[in-house]
Image (cartoon, helix red, strand yellow):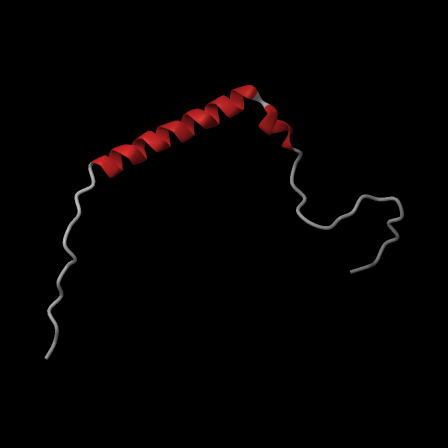
Length: 62
């Protein structure tokens, strides 16, 4: 791995992700919020219909 002189270049340390410009879209935020709200409703229904069961008993060997 050759070393290069990087005077004045931006630091290359850390996570190199894309700019967050896509997160600033109101339409995209609205779509993501709709997905989150639907998932929360599904979870609420799951919890409301939860039926607890006794633990399964396994036969023990003597």
